[in-house]
Length: 384
Image (cartoon, rainbow, N blue to C red):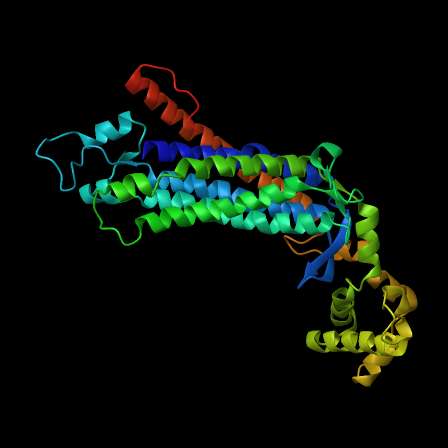
């Protein structure tokens, strides 16, 4: 279990050391860089690139914290438990455990020799991390493609298709996302290796089910290294992303909320009024036209309200201000929102959490290093 606890600590440190630091730095430079946010693959609301990256940093922070909590949960020593039912020798198991860098002995002798739950839990945490990062990578792949072109990477991280030289590919994104699949697959392999085995000391469980555990840790480290390169070097194009945000009806919900907050229209009715306003404009323009914010008007919004029994006093300047993409971002006030000040606060809080996780990982690595030197008389190498 000692190698496993070292792997858990190293995993937490890896999450902290590169990818999240780079994400926080990049996010801090884009707290006001607007872009469209998508739901169901359709433009939904305006957000900022910094807001999006703050979510990525928070997800990786949670993984680091979970790995540290897992270390504390599984850092129990199995030694001295015997073959399965204990020993006739009155060994001081607590002294053995502390000398080897554990928090204490595993209380139950059978659990000591039979359980490999720590392996399953470590693999599970890394598979969750991989699955989450794969979703972020999917967005980055989409946004860097020709349909969006919001993002770019430097030449050393790009590739040119030999058959289609006009294409600018980013294989680093695909490789990183592919590795997230290995994390899930290797985790599943570990679980299958233990399933339907007796709860005892088995070669099948001890050797075969953990055969690819080090591959799991090393694959995660490589994936995070690639991810770090991406977020540290990504170039966001605010003019392209902003043009899309300004050309779509991403502030429609802002208009509805304004009708409720400033004009007394009930929240659900306000949504219906705005929907009627948009539907009428689309019907007037015809099926071939693309409805953009500049084609919506205050008189038409007033008319939509009247059709539903609401007398609205709205000027054109007021409506134009509500539909402005940048202004809609600045209006967000709730904690955790895309408002620039809120994003800066999120980044600061996440940085503090990560500092704490890094200190925790360093402290636990120190315990293991001291135990190694104490018991072997040699300097500890790389605990990974």
